[in-house]
Amino acid sequence: MKLENKIAVVTGGGSGMGRAGAILFAKEGARVVVADLDEVAAKEVAAEVSGSGGEAVAVSADVATLEGNEAIVSAAVDTFGGIDIFWANAGVAAPMSPVSEQSIEFFDTLMAVNAKGPWLGARAAMPQLRKRPVASFIITSSLSGFRARPNNSAYSASKGAAIQLTRALAVEFAPDVRVNTVAPVSTETPMLRTFMAKQDDIEATIAGQRAGVPLGRLARPEDIAKAALFLAGDDSEFITGITVPVDGGISARS
Image (cartoon, rainbow, N blue to C red; front, side, top):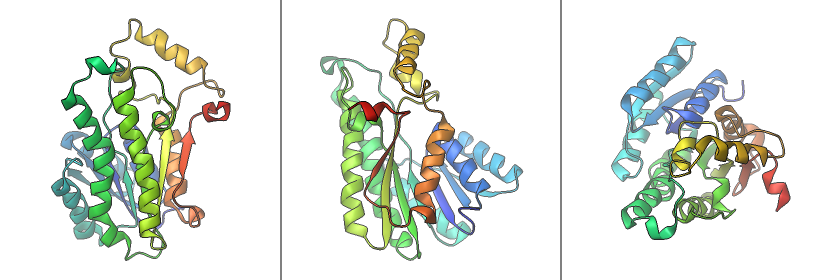
C-alpha cells in the first residue's frame, strides 16, 4: 500500500474530489481526517471509510479561517498522533459571468477559500508536517489558474494565486516538506453545474467542454484523487513546487 502508516488530512473531503481522495488514501493504508464545512457530509465519508475497514475521523471546519485549520490539525494530532499529508482541497466555484456582474464580496469569498485557505492550512499544518520524515502538502488549483477564458476572472485569480503559493511554500519549506498542486480540468462533480449556472444551455456547454478534451471526456473525481495520491506518497519524494495538470491533454495544445 502506498500510504501505509501515513496520516492524511483532506479538506473538502465531504464530496467530489475530496471524497474520492479520502476513500483512496484510506484504501492505500492512510488514516484519514475528513474535513468539510458540511459536517453531515464529512461524517458520511468517514463512516464510509470505516465501513470498508479503514480509519477516519470527521471534522467540521471553515478553511477560510485560521481557527478552522487549527481545529483540523488538532483533530489529526489528537486522534492519530500527527500529520504526514495535508491535501488543501476545499474550494468554492463561481458561475461564469462578466467582471462587471461580479460583486466584491464574490471575489473576496473565492480568494478566502481558494487561495487564503491553503495558506492558512500551511500555516497551521507545517509545524506538524516538518516532524515527519517524508511529508507532503498538496493544493487543489485548477486549469483556470494558468489558462484564461472569458467571464472567469475572479475564479482564475484565486486559482492562479494557489499555483504561485505552491511555488513559494515549496521553496520556504524545503527540504522538510514537499508542496505541489493538482490542476484539474472541469470535473464531473456537483460543483461543475455551479460554474455553468448562468449559461443558456448548461448541458450543451458541458458537452462542448467534453468534446474539447483530447482524451474524450471530462475528469472524474477519482482522476484527481489518483494524481494527489502520487504527490502524497513516497514515489514523488524528489518532486516539489510543481503543478500537475489533470486535464486529459488540454495543456498539450498550449
